[in-house]
Every structure is written in C-alpha cells, then in structure tokens.
Image (cartoon, rainbow, N blue to C red; front, side):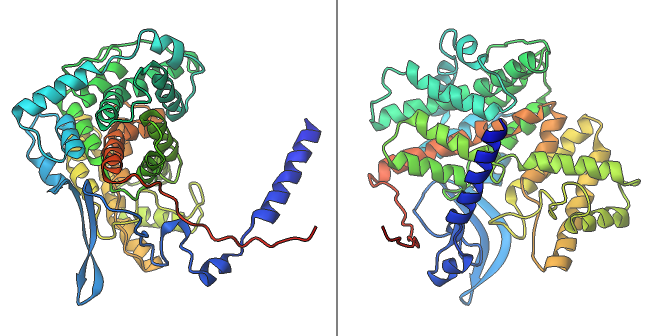
Length: 440
C-alpha cells in the first residue's frame, strides 16, 4: 500500500506540473474561463424560448442592475405561482407549460395528470434489484444508477423520434420522486440501521405530496407543508440554458445520445458542489451562527460573526457567506423573494419563528457588510431559505440535492426537447492548444 501511495503521489506531481497552464495565456488569447467574460457575463452559446432571466436594464447603452426576474414561457414565475389556488399544487401545470410551451386547458391538464400518474410505477422488482443494491448516502449517485438501469427496461430505447423522447422524459419526471425517496430509505435502512418502509406513490397526489407521503412512516402531511414544497419545486424547475446541468443536457442531447444517458449526465453535473447542494452549506453556517452568538436579534453580534466569516476566522474558513450572491442576480433573486413568504408561514406552523428571524437578520446584514468590504452588490439567493424549508419539512440533508433534481428534471426535459426540435448539430466548442512540441 505504501508503494501504491508513493506511486500515486508521483503521478499527482507530474500531472500538476505538466497540466498547468499559465493564467496569463488566457488573457493573451482572450479565452473566457468557464465560458464567462471578465465581468462574469456568460458567453452566448445558443438560443432558447423556454425561460428568461433578467438582472439588468440598459440605459443609454449602459447596463444597470435591476431587481431579478425569472420568466417561464412568457410568464413571470411569481405570477404563475400567484394565480394558483390557495391549496392548489401547481407542479404538473407548470411542468406542462415548460414542456409544451402553453398553459393547459382543463382537459389538457386532466390528460397530462393522468399520463404522469400512469408512468409513475417502477418496473417489477426494480426497487429490490436496483435501488436496494449498494445503498449509499450519495442519493444522487443511486438515482443516476437507477436512471441508467431504467434504460434496460425500455424496449424503444433506440427510437429517436420526438414522440418517444417526450414519452421518456415524462416517464422520468413521473418516477423521479420515487427514485429519490426510495434511494434514501434504502440508505437509511442499511447504513443508519433504521426501519425501512416502502410506500407506493399515489397517482392522485402531486409530486410534493408524494414525496412527503413516501418519506414519512405515517404518510401524513399538512396542506401548508405540501404547498411550500410544491412552490419550492416550481421555483427550482428551470433557470435558463446556461446553468451547468442544463447546458450538459443540451450538449449530450446534441450528440444524439438517448434520454436516460442525457439525464444521467445532467445529474452528475448537478451533484457537483459548485452547482447543487449550496443550501446544505447555508444550513451548516446558520447552525454555527446559532451556537456562537448569544442574542439572535442583536445586529452587532450577528454582524461581527459575518465579518469573521469574510475574514476566514470561523465556520469553514473559506471567506464566504453562504446563500449570498448569484452568478446572474445582483439586486434580488425573484425565487428567494417568493419563497420567503412561504418560509414565514411554515416557520409559524412549526414554532420555529425565532430561527426564521435569525435568517432575516443575516439576510438584512450580509449584503451591507459585503458591499462595505468588497464593493459588490449581492442579494440572498434561492438556496438561502430552501435548506431551512426542507429541514422544517423533516427532509434529511442527504435528499436536498435530489429534491433539486426532482424539480429540475422538468427544465432538463424541456431543453432536451427544444434541442431536438431546433437543431441537429453537435455542440463542439473549440480549445486552443498551447502544447510545446518536443523533439524525438
């Protein structure tokens, strides 16, 4: 083992030496690292009619930050949520809009709901033979393995027609809640030595209701709990074609690969800590704040802690205030603004208002401190409150990123369909070689 470790250390040293590229070359050749220019703006790589993200206005040719906006198929997302009934679950209705491009009428929605319910069931013995084999706390990995295995059960796997691709997308949208919860239940049984229960999904329930039903031993939930989770899923459904997992979806789709492989690739992208999972960091940070301060309503004490965060003197010593800032939004994240009102309602129901007040204090103070220190305008993002929501819903941390995937599978599917409809060209960006030729 010692020899192997020494060998791997030698390989690591060689890789670091031979793979290093001088950062000055990126400036010399005008290369945008991460497909973002020097101001952080994304390089245009395609067109989409699915969603729109707005974070600035142009006045006299100058970009000026504005309150963030998120539009799904021509509708502001807050308007879509606002027009739903008080207890209405909107996931399927908004999913139809993103996939098809128009709001469903009563019959169209009834048919869509029926199809989703029909496709919900997993193949016979799939839970035993696939999900319960090699369980792990990495639920995203378990789900990805399940997605790829589902391809083996699809007799029309190689049918590349648009109709078949839509059918496959609908199947995965329907099955994602079950794949996520069952993966956790298997892990919880085998690794945590807790009791295991497998509740079948109910085709009459919404995805949010099914998640809560399948996750809880007694299958019970309140209307508020279901509504808040449903709203969180809608807000996470789609966020443009440029986010890493959606771009991955379009890249793999453009190669002609099948739906299962494409969505599995998107899952691998989403599980990366730079993409999904940010809400877990927020939760851990807030727990640390609670332990280190005496008065959760003392602005000066909270501000002092946040200053220490930026100075890398506390928590994980990374110099970050998690949940603050976004690659696109500067003044406000529209998703966070919508979610916050539901968080307050759920916190009151769960008798956790004091914790909510601490979140509010950090939300108020952090942008001011960051502006004073770094002269950057930042706002709380959707991840600032989402982890708190999941915690109040008794959703374990292992499922946080998986719940994100349950929502984003809709956006991935919409972009896959649009890519198939609009172009048959493979996405192939260029890389400039700076290799030095060697003699001999």
